[in-house]
Image 1: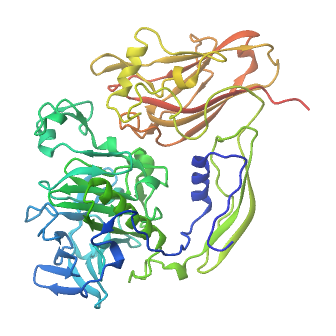
Image 2 (image 1 turned 90 degrees about the vertical axis):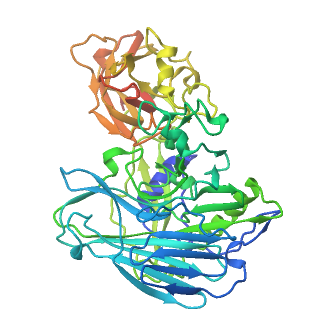
Length: 612
């Protein structure tokens, strides 16, 4: 089937399939373009359908300015920082304090192995006009590491800006490259940062549900820092409504697949400032990785790589002179103003319509760099994914296609049926949760707005002040009786002790030979071992223990999952007895922070394999 990827599974979980699709497919498929308009609104302007004068470029000694009659974009020359963005009579909708504080920039967080980490705003050293016509201007601001001081990140960086006729905004993409033989380096983060003007933009929108007036950054500066620096209790506030609230940038995180659009709205004048990421293909971590969007500042982000909700597993490490090249973007900065319904909802809906249009137009045909592949130079892959397991929806474990798949320009690779045989050693005796790589189905106190409340880990010792969680199979309900995170108990500030959860169940008989299997899937972890005991919590050694895993910090950062971990624990049959049994799970470490621990995805006990 041309241009589509077809999967089949007996009622699989969408999360599992999205993960498998990423592993199986290495091409972004071409989609048809269409013009989308927001219902009931009259956009002024509305993206690529607004007539305007041709695009004009004016460049001088220290800046370059592109004007299409709708927006006027000013960039530093040759640095390639966004100095000003003029729209609807506002000279600059961005916050800038020169000489080195700009409204838009690209930065990299990096270190040499064993060295001190730093975040570097990449400065261009060469300015080049790539395209200059009445319909489009594309500019390049590049830098070469070989010709730069060696204390800078070892990357060649080419920042590209595109302004088109009739478009209410601009496109920005970045090409990064390290050449063969360059020094070892770790890179934690690549991102674009946009800083809308503080005095104008106070209403933030990152989804249909998460939209709100935001406190001022000064409120954070005078607030009380909580368990980690990003979380601040607003002890005073310019606007009284924010006093005694907690502000934390991780409250506004979204999974990558869900934040193609995010931005800010100014009430005076009524203007929307939006960042649109039309594709996930250039963002590391896959569609289900949680990532930052916008936060108090105001700040609006386009994240490309980061260790958020993943920790060291997402650090990109380059060794032995390994070369690398990557295109980030293009990302669109879109500005809008709606007549006559110039309210928050109308601006958001119009921005959503523009986002949908950008998604449909992906991959773009107007990008000049040969490193960005247009539709004609892309291929596709199709097939059927069959999940071999007798429990659905959801499945444990991780699938990776055994063969290297090479996709050629213009060709479709037809894989045919591909079968994933899920881990299973015997019939299910009992299970807790849903194997969907998330802890969302478990108990979250006061779920409004669900897990985006600061300090939820502190609710565990409130619910279990003297003894730990006990779960009775066949009686307890995991949506009410299984806390969403297995955390430590703080006995005094800075001193936390392990906690032990107990699962009780009956066995009518015990198989005298073979092993029982505990399938243990974790939705996230922070530097924690999980020890498994069967019936005897005082045994000299646990029946099974995981390694110390995880640095995703998802529990503290309002996440419901981080990095997925899966373990199959073989438990000898002589540990079990006929009748009442107990399995104990211990978050086996002490620490400084009560939010250290694990989030379970799914637990299943299997009997020994059925004898033929």
